[in-house]
Image (cartoon, rainbow, N blue to C red; front, side, top):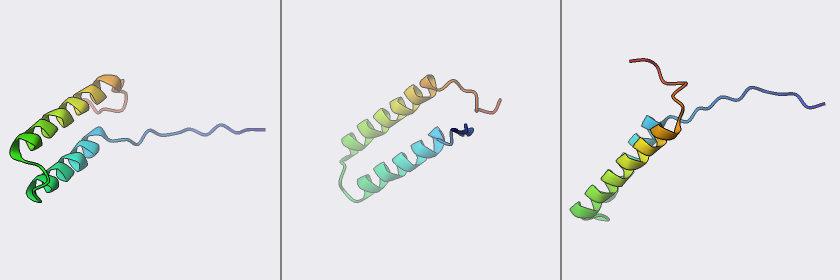
Length: 64
């Protein structure tokens, strides 16, 4: 007999964004990205975050 277990959804979009931002900043500081590429990557990352929030139902966000 299979038992059902409750799963929690522990993905934190803001933490993901912070870690991705830090990786971009590090690449920029180390010269792997020029200023234009860095800004384009930051904008793309921001758009990904916004799209992610749009896909989530918001059930775990605390009211502001």
